[in-house]
Image (cartoon, rainbow, N blue to C red):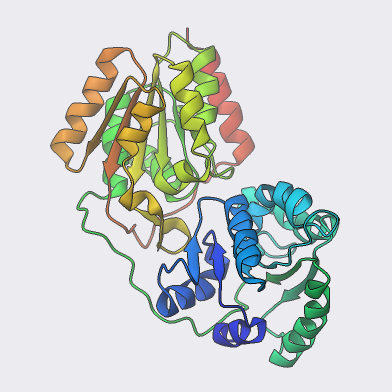
Length: 374
């Protein structure tokens, strides 16, 4: 169905969410219609953040908000749905729009398979009435379901539209760009060169895909890298766990701005523990690029000051190759926790591939390599 029609049928004037490629039509519609406007549209740090924002909107206006997200974000909403929105607590009505990655029978990446299997089951368990919209779903069917949903919402309960692959159409064209000049894949190539045979933990999305292809291009083994293909926002915590237990081995974390924002509390834990053997590189393009390019707030915050305030002994920001190479070498030589923020452009190769090894093979090879170190 046309995305504009879905928005019309729902009839809300406030949307908040975390972008998803399955919902690109909706995301582009919201950006073309509202941009980032706190009265009508906020891109949040994570899905729990969205849910709380939606609750605040309802408390202030009495109206029903919409939260959009990929189904991977269901885990982040369980607590606020159960302990804030639920009709046994504050009875706050919300319409969720959930992109259904990994739908059974539809090929998808490994991190989406189990999540896809339990998507509607989790909604059922959270007492969220739900309806799946596919390519063949008619406007009339959605209108009828929304009429049912309004009765449920009026009782202080929550509802969800689950969006199948290709279900939403007629998205307006929106160009996402920034003024940065460095390209992420080239940044990763410099990190790989500087890291040598040190282990790297990389974040979900195109960064891990580009790291994998960099190893292929270099004729290198993939055993050096743990590709965090899911669990957005947690790669730095994985790296911390590895670094603490391999204190004589330098560990690198290749992170992204959207991932850092999603679970920024991990930076405070990192700074409190101060692993001397960990280098945290945050590639910041101010965008959720892997799922379409919608902006994050990382383009307007100071990650260096945040890192220093969290207790990182060293934190710098670079925006050119010369400074990047200099700071990578400096971090290697100082034997202290270091953060390097790298300002990056938006964009990737059209022919960028995906890892050809399975997630389990990646884990086994990485663990075997770690076992050979110190």
